[in-house]
Length: 168
Image 1 (cartoon, rainbow, N blue to C red):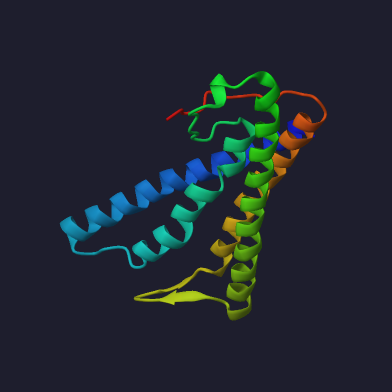
Image 2 (tube, helix red, strand yellow):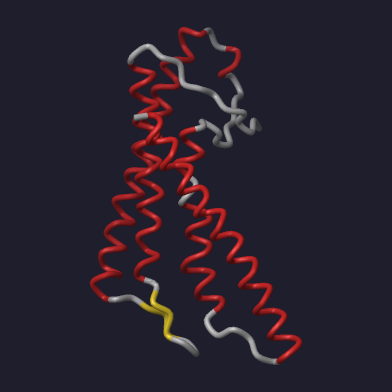
């Protein structure tokens, strides 16, 4: 199960990376065409905001959780005895699952409404955005699955693998 989770999280992270590269190319091309040829790419801002940014932000969440590499603040944790660290790891994982699940639930409702209304942004071009609304719950639910695996590991006596988290 862990291998499948790792693989799925990696695929989502690669898609997020591709989204970032496409965003850079799209925006750069739009700027070049706009300032050198007076022909900007219609709908650039809409596509960037509705697709590229959402993919870049939400799709890699599972990868971050699978590798246990979120940004953390450890004021006291490292100074606590091992006997207290495990329950705190369990509590933090449960709270993270609850937070991601709540956001996923809300974003699924928004995505379904967008699908029902065939949501689009009207500008120079009509940009269909309802499909992008499903990227948010996809990323959040994948993060929930990764955290659920971590929770099972913690509850069965295993140790959560700590990546090289950015510590503040």
